[in-house]
Image (tube, rainbow, N blue to C red; front, side, top):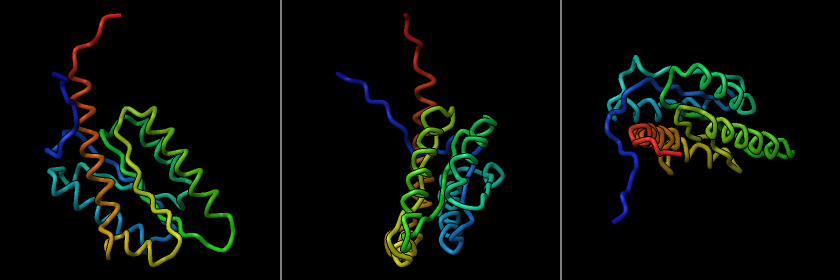
Length: 162
């Protein structure tokens, strides 16, 4: 019978970072509130949460990488909001942000989760920041808790022999 190994939502041990873009702050600050609320409700102390802000979503991967390199955090939640406009700027920013955070997640010792909204309209972004479609910051924090606990289980596995 196979052994199933997965994370859970029990209070994790360690510090959490939230990396958030200030651009579209009327959206991103709601995402931060949702993320902090979720972390605290799942047993993370307020003092174990640090919020790092950068100018925009394009800068988010670099900030996330630098925060990850400190090795001070077991989990990093990334938050931002890119809203489509009349130019291809949306495609460039959202694509580079997604790719950059993904690269950090692949190499980080911390659990890194993606809570960056990529929306066609302001209304969609508002809905995803807590009005109609839940709060995506909260969802990213919940995924981070689960991944931190999964990372801990993986670290506790016996090491294989080569």
